[in-house]
Length: 313
Image (cartoon, rainbow, N blue to C red; front, side):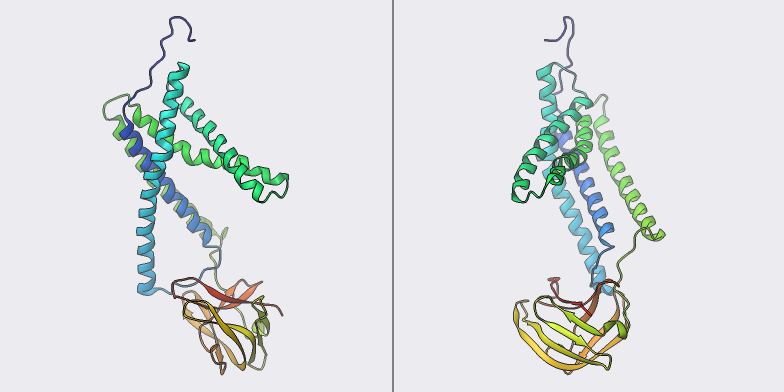
């Protein structure tokens, strides 16, 4: 019971449309920033394709459109299933306890729900593959991730649903939109600075010499290519694939190989294999300087599937 003479402030019942809208914009902005962080991080790792020109341009435009669609959907779904319910739950707790509907109470509500969900999700994940006490870190990591992901959007949405002055909801919406753009610019600038300074390095295929190619390269499943210093190559059990990407057989043959410089953006070298039927085109260099690979694309051109052989020496 509240102390005598204390009149709790009743949380507002209205403003749900503003709560939903601001929550959707905030979650959408978070999705875009998270995607940008993922893209910047992934630049360190092996990737192929995109040799410039119209193909690269169309791919970039498609990726931007896809990102816009996904972030919009994520914002709408996240606001409807997480932000709005959390704001309403905070209001209900305020009514039930006779407390003021404050941002602290909303944040506490977010934290309690995040911990409960982390316990539930973690309990479903761990039994499938518990390898020791270290796996218990999944609980705090999940809880922290849920709090970081939902707290900012929920607090802004609550502020939009509890306007103190006329037009405050629009100001909250504007601050969320501008803040999202600002964080996006900061993230992009930080990524550019990290790569520009050399703290992070964009992936580049290894620059191998012909001497580096000499040796046996295997697919880990019995197939191998043996490159000799005199320019001959011997294939044993090298997989052949149909148009669908399914394995259609294995090839044993002897031919010639050559490593030539290539002017392609992502392909500094071009590996050619001659006189081996079915293996005479489409080979590229991948991996890293320490662990190089040779590969060829299989299946549909946009499937991303590769047949890879790693150097064994």
